[in-house]
Image 1: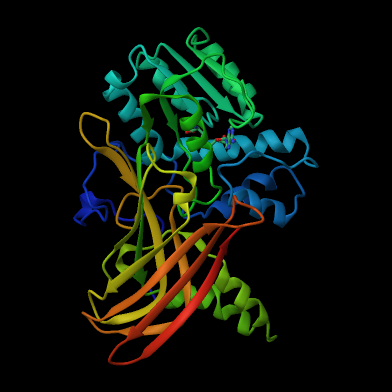
Image 2: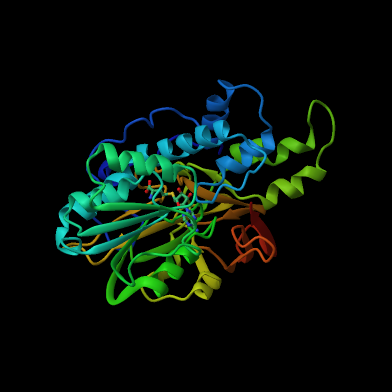
Length: 396
Ligand code: SAH
């Protein structure tokens, strides 16, 4: 049963249906710079190895954090800027992500022409540059990390200082020199969509500055759930702790089970249908809507074993001439978000047509709202086995 997880899901063009409800326009070019089989952790380990000693804990935190204000006071600016550029390099080289934004902005200049745009979490300023090229009257680019200094320089050398103003600071603390903006653009999505909780920052900006009929881009996001066979990898990540060089370390297993794994899932591992868990309308929702409980029913499309549930998301830009967006699902071209794998305590032996039913509760961690707590309840009443269980996961 063991199928190896491979790097990069098959693109829909290879014959698979897109998992999102609506087929969307996405980028057209080939993915560059993603030919290797590395996880984010490998990527950063490789990067930092050029610069000497660093703690694993720190590296791990960084690899799991794409959207955050960098609060690592003890870390030298040297390391800070180094890691910042690594993170931004990975995001820019995610062509599904960046090219979709570029296509949205360039192919829908009616949304930007002569408009005042706010770029929430500007990073290198790439989205602001696209907006300026698409005819924006002015772009305010807010970025809280050191990358804001680079963004200022990037704007200057590209001759766009008259159109783009980079403001260094937190969106929640900054004063804009104007009262309103016409458009808010942001790439706020984290692993499992909500990890790092930058969505609240976008909603804050929307409520404070966006004109009544203004546009938030993207304006829709949806979270999905499916189930996979994953014997080999579960063995490697979870059962591994039973016998480590001849020693029983199974006490770590419980911890490992609680940590969702961000990884690329081979579409061949998928055993059930995909269930839409939650849709979010960024132009209307309130911050509290990012906490929810959603029920699911996953029906087996073949007889197999199930070891894990897998979550992924889509985002879309519905204000465009034609619907545009991208999916981070296993059947779509892979992105740096990969998918989020939640291992199950049980191995479910399922027959075609049988269903796992349950619910998933998602909410920001009370102590650190940038982390996500997930509660999964599931029950199964099949020919070969029956079970009912609640599992807790923490994205840290
Ligand atoms: N827009 C860029 C970067 C996206 S990553 C791109 O598409 O490539 C998100 C960025 O938002 C990060 O650079 C992070 O430092 C910044 N950010 C996160 N929270 C923020 C906040 N509250 N205020 C300002 N910037 C924030």
